[in-house]
Length: 137
Image 1 (cartoon, rainbow, N blue to C red):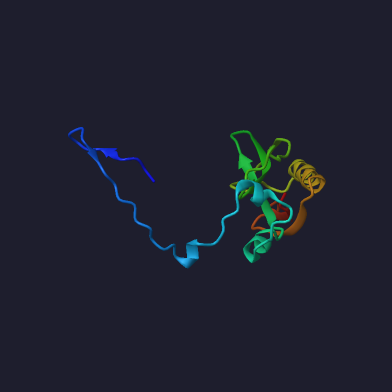
Image 2: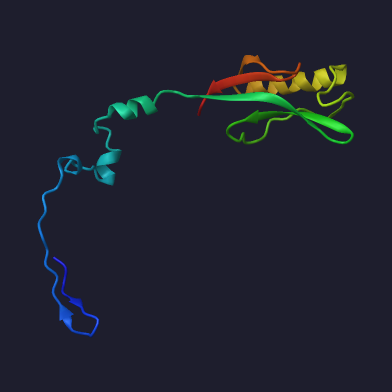
């Protein structure tokens, strides 16, 4: 029960407490923080679905500066640290031409992705825009 509250004029006013029935939907026991961490806690079906492994996906894209370009990995989730190729000079319009220098930078980036556990999963619009996936951590 709550104590009596002060009224606007400084006088005490009483508050009546009313017992109301708790709806069945909210009457379920809510585990305390200790119970929620217990290894004996039962797992709900929703928890099982959430525990299924998910996959991260990424694609190689190209950043073009005034003089040099660089391949990088674009992903829905930020990659820490960012995975990039060495810088290289590239001719051509929007997409760099497939020169020996650009191809070498691309191969180095693919090797970094493979070392980080990424596997090939398709190809994009350009010669360098390969897609990769890996299990989420």
